[in-house]
Image 1 (cartoon, rainbow, N blue to C red):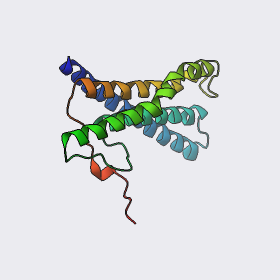
Image 2 (image 1 turned 45 degrees about the vertical axis):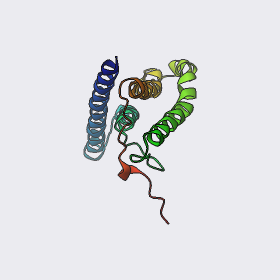
Image 3 (image 1 turned 120 degrees about the horizontal axis):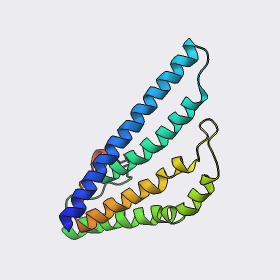
Image 4 (image 1 turned 90 degrees about the vertical axis):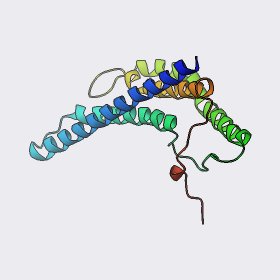
Length: 170
């Protein structure tokens, strides 16, 4: 069972990496296309700006799941990697509880949020904005799955990259 959760989390992370990379590549292509048409043809299509914005939303949220999985998300104080095992697991538990406390209510209320956005359509593309905003609960669900996999599948705490921690020296 541990191996299933761990491998599933790894494959989900790989899929999120590819998807985030694809969205950012599409964002780059759309922005280049928009700049070229604006300055060469003096007439940029309006849908490129809107689609680039949605690619940024999806790429950023999927990238956040990847950063959480590998432990390179920004943190004020890096979790301990040395010391007693109890101290390391307590820090990992505190990080998990804080993540659930902050993201849990967003996931809980996301059904109402998605229903409200289903009635609204985008200006240029004319699609329901729920197709864009579904990225928020999806990213939270992926992060929660990584937490579950870490708790069930991988008994070791993740190795957080300490160079990403904020420098608090004065």
